Length: 233
Image 1 (cartoon, one colour):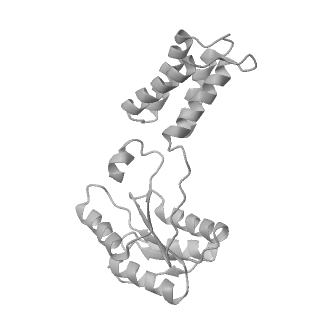
Image 2 (cartoon, one colour):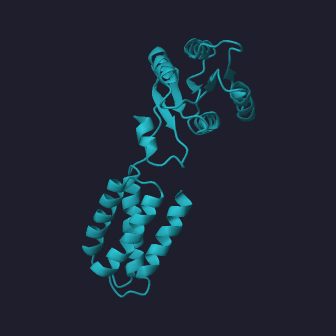
Image 3 (cartoon, one colour):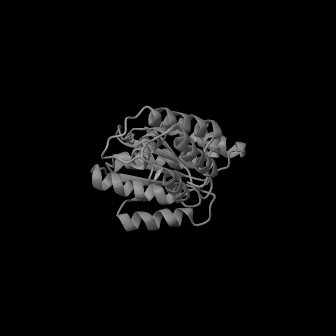
């Protein structure tokens, strides 16, 4: 999605290449392509319209420096607005608590288990945490084995209860195990679920209520598009 968006934006900016100044006409032509690129990337149409309106207002209000070409100025404005659209600031993961508990959630096949391992490795190396991975996906074949392999690769312990089908109990026992072993971070890997699966939604609600996590992370495939908002809700 991001590659496609980048290519479309680059093509859009070529409209301004060679132009002496930013005008309402060449900005409108450029932004028509930008809006189309955003819609192709499954950005909500209201968001796309608001984005291009903001960029247009800022572009037409700019005095282009003699050293800066209109195309370069437009790239900067669009870049800054895209950064703002994506949140504007970096939000750190909340790892307060002893142990801090991170609950992983997401749809089936979104990459939660792999991301759990990457997150554990990052927090271990950059934040000097002592993580424990807890395997609460009791449905997907080989999910527990996958987490074990990842834990072994990054030298992080993995808590499992083979044969147990109650993820709430596994999560609680995993946190207790972390306390006993003096581990200060617990990452709970849960099963993938569909928004329409009421039973699975109730399950993750029950897990969250039981373990009271410091942070809940929602893992989304970048191809999901605007439906990710509905699923997050």
